[in-house]
Image (cartoon, rainbow, N blue to C red):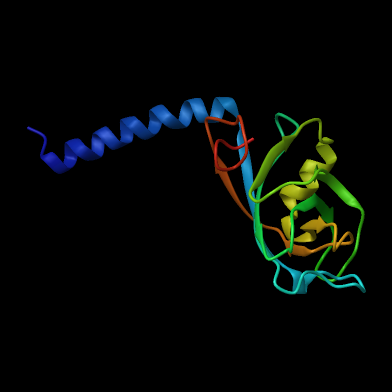
Length: 167
């Protein structure tokens, strides 16, 4: 007779094995995060002094897609754009991926399709060499900014932004 503890362990193994197979068949996505502040803005105009935010970015190379969710506060108004850029702390660069380019209240989320494989690989393999920034009407060169940091995860959903299913 199997003890209660042993049977619970066996059930857990069966459940985990049942979940891993479908997840691996669908694809893996890396989830990258960023904590943003106005103080991290590197241009001469500076950023929003009270601006803070956080971003979650999921990179799905198999689907050529990047999904995002950005929350912010203290910007003095709605965001007018969100960008993922290649560059280290203090560096300025052009957008690698335009996340959104319309006025948006916090939180803002979505997915960008048809991102070049080379771009997704660079972001996924060297997240700390990339940053997210958010612009506003008052701070068109950047209100808040933060470097990416990473951790890989796998998700069966792969349908939407990071909170609702990794893209």
